[in-house]
Length: 408
Image (cartoon, rainbow, N blue to C red; front, side, top):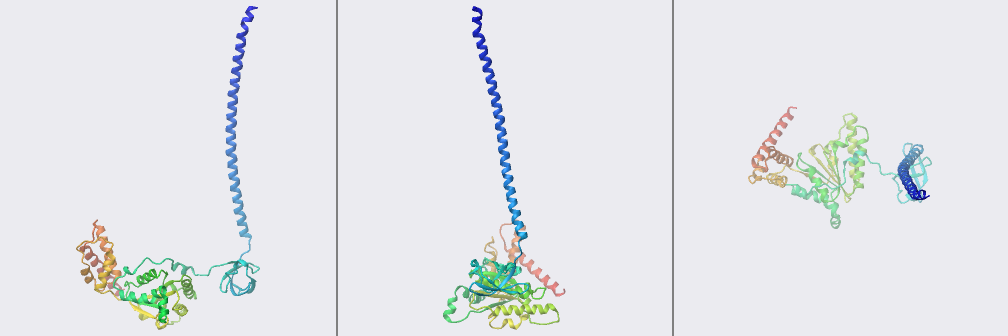
């Protein structure tokens, strides 16, 4: 009896140990199961997030497809021009068939609808939207919105010419009250003529910069188009764009390409050039001298221009841009070299004396060529020798080009 009593605590202890081990094992099993469930939960959460993203993408794609379907199935709109307005009604003319219809002006467009405005209409002739003015894309390409970065101090030897251009173009735009006080109308247009490279385009850019005006540059050859009526339409669009962008300076380079004396050789080409010039004359007559649009034209051959262009009321100021004299050449050389590293031995007066008969553009090329000589020998300063060699190179090339042109 005593032996059984003695073994009982040992058995109880063993049972307790076994129970604890079983509980630890069960706890470990539960932990593993819990970890597996947690991993599964994270995986399900990631899949759910991915499914939500896919659902959103599908919804966006469905919206795009709906919009695309609406665009495809919606009826097309037609273009019309407003002819007259009265109260809340407008007379519109549809493009293409010239059908005229009276329709009601929507309340949101009431302040913008006026004769001449282009609108889009539906099949019921209701106004849907207002369209911008029709402008030839070639005319838009010619436009320079900002004023050119050119000033009068970049032009040398043309002080008298600059004064005339300032009086004719800049002052009417910046100080129109001076003309009103005296009671005179400013010149309607300025025609500059002279040899190539004398600074005609540079003067026009400088005036536009000082007047803080938009600058539209076009070449006379751009107005000569292949098909009938295109040139005249382009002229009309360019002048209309100049009015819309006022204050504006319209510069027509090489005007002799379209403004030559009218002739007719029996071909469609000459007739088209004549029509383009007539449209140009008509547009120039339509400008008010005191308006915010000024016309500057340039040509190398004033003797080829039609007399109708030169009459008063169109180009009131005809200004010759001469080949620079010695003092002007020296000023031009100083302008082109003021930002260059020039050696002390460079004599601008001597260079100006050597360059007799050269234009401002020729002098700019000489200075640039001298800089290339320095670059070639890896130097740091432009010397008199560089200038002389550049002068000899440029003048020799010009003589060769002149000689080859004589026998071409």
